[in-house]
Image (tube, rainbow, N blue to C red; front, side):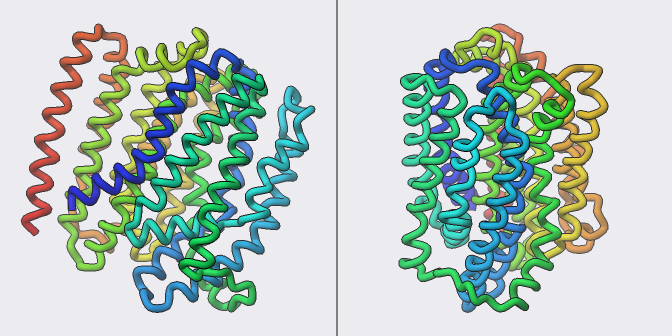
Length: 469
């Protein structure tokens, strides 16, 4: 089981990370032709468009997953109807997204308004949720290579296009929008044929209203839950824009997420890998192995994030060839350590969704997002844009651990997850990393080796407990 967890996490996670690494090596090239304003325009538009992204699927992915496990003989019939419904819905969604972009585009990008609008909505109009449905199928069938190969190929294409558009053609922020559009169209196209012809999951537009109504009753409570991702990851920049923080400062904050975005991707990958394994245990009523699997993932995250954070200063110095932007490494430490919420969050969220207790999920995740937004509104005027990294950390800690204390979760759970211990350890490691980043390289090497040995000992013990079941 441990082998499958790490191998699938590696395939889901390392495939896009290979291209992230390539992207890192491209940073010294493209950052010479980018300014704070370029990062600011990209950050502001991403912040606003992400606010609507959750509406693209209306939370219906949870229905896809549940029907796959609970109705293995009939799930394709339900999937085809949901696919048809989402294709129609995405025309409405694309119109709303286009209107938002038209209204909020920064003044410095006014001359590119219409082309930016087209580049953002075209993939939705042409393909809808083709990628979402097909990749979900491959994930649940435990065929990660189908997703990984696409991630690698189109990831490298994205990096290459960024270099060409930004460095060769000097397009600035428009280089990102063009490369995202081209890669988005090609990625969807690569999923379209296998989904519609190989798997024969063609959309049914004459769908049964009762099925869609019942599906939405399950999925819509998940919309605030998925919206929390935006409130925690991107709303900071929207709040800064509303509060008239300069586009340049927003750009600096956006740079601080350079490594954090990699950890976010790895967290998503680990969820894709561990989800089917946990669901299998829940179906077999095996609580302890599921818990120990979550603990293994949590320790692994500690090992990785702490190791990256104490070397953050050197990492930013190498990657960001802009002296002013490279100084944001200290915010990168807080942002990366915040993503340690993910394994414990998966511990209660996977089981909660398996039992269709979706009314619990939105309260936790949406609450975490609201905490982040309110703290930003209160603190940014007094402490500046940098405080947003710390408020994000607080929001993620709430999201990762509060769920264990909800009555609804306690009713379906019989294992002891020790949330107070794990959140305390997260904060202790974060404080240590925040100050250790300034230590000498010799001390950092010693700390890295010590933490690695300790983590591997605990992972081995937990794996032994899983295998004994």
